[in-house]
Length: 420
Image (cartoon, rainbow, N blue to C red; front, side):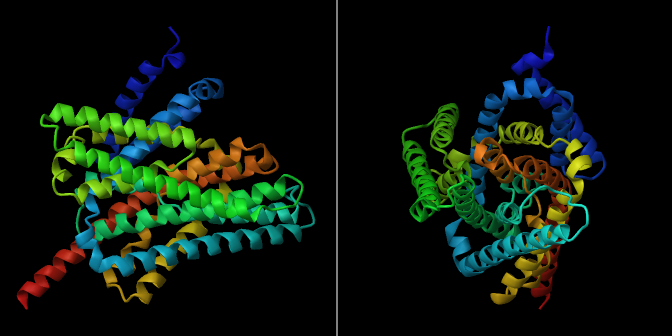
C-alpha cells in the first residue's frame, strides 16, 4: 500500500496529526492554529514534490473551499447596525495601514537592492528594473492579512467583543484593497516582462475591477439565495445540505473564473447575518463543522510552507517580515490617530494584523505559474514562503496576546464607568 498515493488516507492522518499537534500547542499555552501550521509544514518536508504536485489540484480545491467557508463565517460578526458608528474609523485605519505597509516594504526592498549593487561581488544577477518589479510585488503582497488565522484564534478563545469585530472589519477591507493593488501591480509587471515594454492601461484598469466587481456580485447572489431559502427549509439537516452545496458551488465558480473566495464569502455572510429571518439558522449549522474545516484548511495551506526555505532565503524572508510588521503596526497607529480612535485600537490592532497566509500564498502561486515571471519567481516564492511561515507562527501568538489585552482593557473600562 502506498500511503502517499492514497488521498483519503492522507487527509485522515493529517486531521489526527493536526489534532495531536493542537493539543501540544495548548499545553504550551499557544493557539491551536500553530499546531496545524507546523503539521502542514512538516507534511511539505516529508512528502516528495512529485506526490505533492500530483494532488496539487485537489489540495487547491480543498483550500479554496476552506477559505470560502472561513470568509462566510466571518460575516457572523459583521452586523452593519453595530459597525455603522465605527464605519469611518474602520475605513481610514484599513486604508492607511495597507498603504503604509505597501510603501514601507516596497521602499525597503528598493533600498536593499540598491545597496547590493554597490557591493564588489553581486549577490543577484538581476537588473535594477527586475529589482523594482520584485519590490512592487512584495509591497502589494504585504498589504494582505490572514482572515483564516484571525478567525481561528478568535473562535478558540471565544473573543467576540468590540475589538474583535473591528479587527474583522478592518481585515475585510484590507482583503479588498490588497486584491486591487496586487492585481494592478501583477498586470503592469506582466505586461512589461513580456518584452514589448508596452503596457495596456485599459487592461490594468479592467482586470482588477472586474475581479472584485464580479466577486461582490456573486457574494450578493449567494447571500440572497441562502437567505430566501431559509423560509422554506425547516429541518437542520436540510439547511446544512443546502448551505454546503451552495458554498461548494460558489467556490467552484470562483476557481473557474479566477474570482476571490474571500470577498464572495464575506459579502454572502454579511448579507445573511443582517437579514433577521435567516441569520441564526443559517450560521448555526456550521458550528460543529467549523473546527474540522479550519484544521484541514491550515494543514493543507501550510504544506506549501517548506521550513527549508528559511535556510536558503531566510534573511530576505526575515527582512520582509520585519518591514511588513513595522508597516502594519505604524500604519494602524497612524490611521487610529487620524480618526482619534481609542488607545485600545492604537495599541493592539496592528499586532493582530501580522498573520499572513491564504491570500499571500495565492498571490505567490499566481507568480509561480506565470512564465513571464520566470526570471525571479524562485526568489519571490522562497522568500515569500519563508516570511509567511514566520508571520503565521508569530502572528497567531501576537493576535492571541493583543485580543486578550484589548478585551481586558475593555472590561476594566466598563468596570470604571460603572464605578463612576
